[in-house]
Image (cartoon, rainbow, N blue to C red):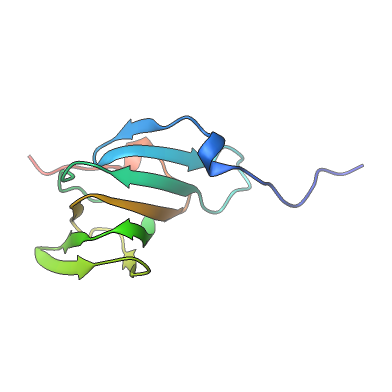
Amino acid sequence: MSAPRYAVRQLDDIAPVACPCGQARRAFGDDPADVASVHLTDISVDAETHYHKAMTEIYVILEGEGHMELDGDLVPVKPLTAVVIRPGCRHRAVGEMRILNIPVPPFNDADEWFDA
């Protein structure tokens, strides 16, 4: 019998881990066949500006309001705002929000870069 061609995760059952902007519950990305990961992230502090060299991120604001700083531009966000952040874009979230973050390819700590 072959392995299933699907996977299911209950995000609120996953233990949160610290990230530059608060706490993230990360699903998928642990299988080499995964093409993306999914993070339920509670942004509780103004994140430090950072970028990724290989990864694209899609943020979907679920709760709260604030701004995304994207290559120096301040973009207001509110529930159901979706933002695509392409490789090289310096970015950070500002404000208290709950977001769904979809990194493509899956999130990799080694692809998180900070300017000095």
